[in-house]
Image 1: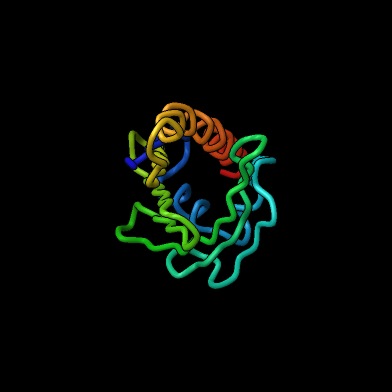
Image 2 (image 1 turned 90 degrees about the vertical axis):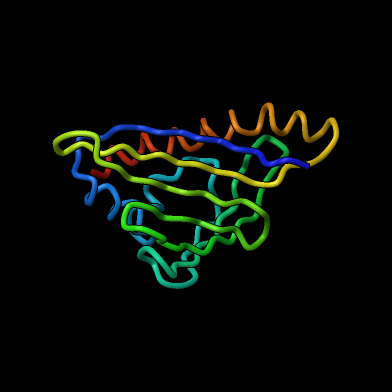
Length: 145
């Protein structure tokens, strides 16, 4: 078993604080930016930033659906970390300034993958699929800024 990593990023013409606030808004902005692969989205506690608990199902592939229950932490002013209670998945959203009124969002997901040949295929193909999903989330975020 090894760690599996997926990383996606995008630059926005918006102040980093505005972008962070949008990402940290799990009741208003987040449901609006989720693509069709997400279903059963529900905020179970909190709703803004650290302390939020949010559930969704993620249709990772045609046959693979992940039931996710994430708890959000904010270890620094530019990071949101979502930790899944149902798996080893951790998703880190980092917002950084890249110029005047510009922000870069980097989404890093990691989890402990399967071993053997299944693990090889997971490490090879799962990051690409998750990157496509996260890229769509980031594209939809642009419409909310």
